Amino acid sequence: MGSRKVLGPSEEDHELISYIQLHGPGNWRSLPKNAGLQRCGKSCRLRWTNYLRPDIKRGRFSFDEEETIIQLHSVLGNKWSAIAARLPGRTDNEIKNYWNTHIRKRLLRNGIDPVTHAPRLDLLDLSSILTSALCNPSTLLNLSTLVGSTQALLNPDILRLATTLSSLKQENSDMFLQQLQENQLLNSLLQIQDVPALSSQPSQFQNLVQQVPVCTTSAGPFINQTAQIMQENVKGCSSNPTSTFSCQNSQENFVPSSLNENLVSLPNFYCNSTTTTDPKVVEPGEYSGFQSANNGYQNFSIDSVMPTPLMSQDPLNSSSTYVNSSSTEDERECYSSLLKFEIPESLDIDDFL
DNA sequence: AAACGCCGCAACCGCCGAGGT
DNA sequence: AACCTCGGCGGTTGCGGCGTT
Image 1 (cartoon, rainbow, N blue to C red):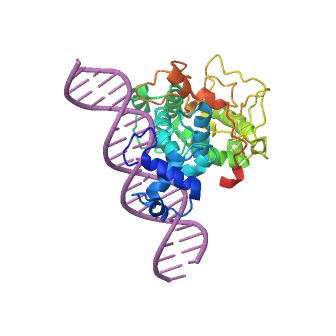
Image 2 (image 1 turned 90 degrees about the vertical axis):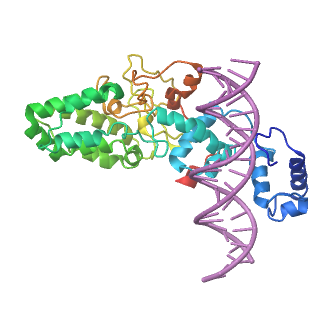
Image 3 (image 1 turned 180 degrees about the vertical axis):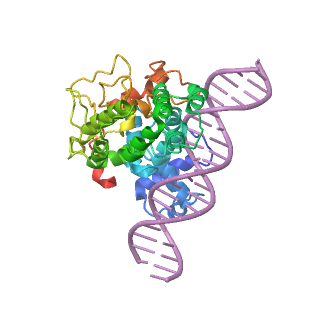
C-alpha cells in the first residue's frame, strides 16, 4: 500500500480490511503488529479512512457536493474533517485535495479570496485609491490617469464609480471631501464587503446608512443615490430579523431562507449583479436569497461595484461583467448555479455556529 | 512517434492539539 | 503535570494522464 496511484487494494490492503472486519478499527498503534503489517498505525489508519473504508464514495464530486463544500468552507474554513462529516462518503483528505486543485483555483479566477470568501480587493485596492485621492487633498493623484491605466483590469462599474468620484472631486473637492468625511460614506462603501458581519448585524449597518444625510453639493445626487441603494440592500438583508444568514430578496418570488429551513445563503457577494437585461428568473420554490436586492439599479449599484464571482476579476479575462455561459466545464463553474443552494438536512448548523 | 512539461490525484509526512490516564 | 494515543491539518511527494512541441 506504499505505492501511489494504487487503483485497487493490494494484498496488504486485504489483510488490513480483513483484520478490521474481524476486530474493528480499535487501537491503531497495536493494529499493524496484530495484523502482521509492516506499517505504522497511522499509515494503516489513513489507508483505511481515506481509501479502504467501505462507505467511501468514489468518483467526481457532484455539483451539489461542490456547492456544499464551498458553503461549508465559507463557514468552517479549513476544517476538512468537519466538512467531510457533512458529505457522506467523502474524506477530509479528498475534499482538501479537491478544494486545492479545483475550487480554490476557480474562486481565485473569479476574484474571490478562497480563505475569506470575500472579493479580492487586492486586485483593485479601491480603498487605498479612494482614500488617497479623496481624503488627502494634498495628494496630486490623477485618478483618471490611474483609472485609464488599469482599465483593462477593472470592472466597468468600478470604473464608473472611480470616474464619478474623480470628476466630483475635481468639481467641488472641498465640499465633497467634507461630505465624504462627515458621512463616512467611504467607510460604508468599504464595510459593505464584510457581508457576514453585515448579515449578522443588519440593524447597525442600516443605521450607518441612514446616517447619510441629504446632500446639497454637486456630489449630493451621487451620494443620495448611493445611500438609497445601500438602504435598499440593507432593507433586504434586515427585514427578516430571525434569519441570521439570510439576505432577503425584494422580488415577489422571494423564498424565505432561514437556517430553520436548512437553507443557508452564501454571503452577499455571491449575489448576482443583475446588470444584464435578462436577469435570472427564479422560479417559485427556488432559493433566491442570493439575488441582489437592488434590481432597480441596473446601471449602478453597490452590488455591481463590489466584485462578485459573477464578475470576472481575472486580469486575463476582464471583458465581461456578466455570467459566462460558455462551455460545459465552465458551465459547472458558473456561479449562477450558486444562486440555488441547499444544505443537506443532516447538516447540524448549531455545531459550527 | 518521442520527449517534455503541466496538471490532477492519491498518498504520505510532520507537526500540533485534544482528550484520556 | 506528564505522558500517551488519536485525530486533524497543511504541505509535500510521486505517479499517471494529457496536451504541446
